[in-house]
Image (cartoon, rainbow, N blue to C red; front, top):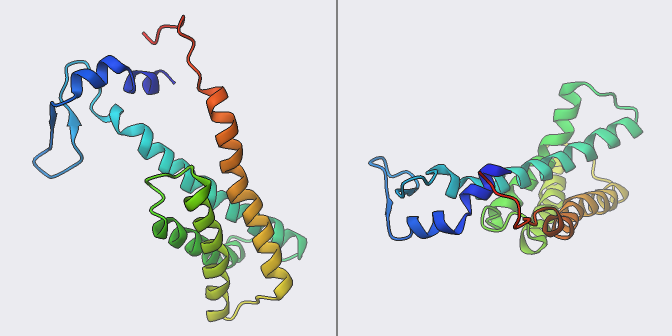
Length: 173
C-alpha cells in the first residue's frame, strides 16, 4: 500500500512533470525526478491490468472446475485444460478487442467484451475441435461467466473507493 501512495503523491508527480526520459532501448518513459521511483508511476496501472486479466481467467477456471465436477468428468489437469483453453482464448480475445489495458476494471466495454468473448469464441472453438455445445450449456456459460466476469468488476467499483480512502492524518513515510 505504501508503494502505491508514494507513486501517486502529488509532489512526486509535480517534480516529474516535464522531466521524463526514454531509455536507449525504447522502453517506457521513466520519471527522472530525484526521489521519485521510476517504475512506481507506471506500476499500479500495469498491476491493475494483470490483476484484472488474472481475475477473468480465474472466473473461467472456476466455471470449468465446477462444470467438470458436476458432470463427474474428474479433475485431471489434461481434462481441465481441454475444457479451459477455448474459454480462456475467448477471454483473451475479448481483452484484446476491448483494449482492456486502458480500462481493465470497467464493466463496459471491458467486462462486457471479455464476457461475450469468453462465451462466443469459447463455444466457437469448442465446435471447431469437436467438443459439445448444447443450448443449455451455452445458457449456463452466459449466466455463470456473466455473473462472475461482470460481477467482480461491479463489486470492485463499489468496494474500491471505500477501501482506498486515505486518512490525511496518516503519513506514508
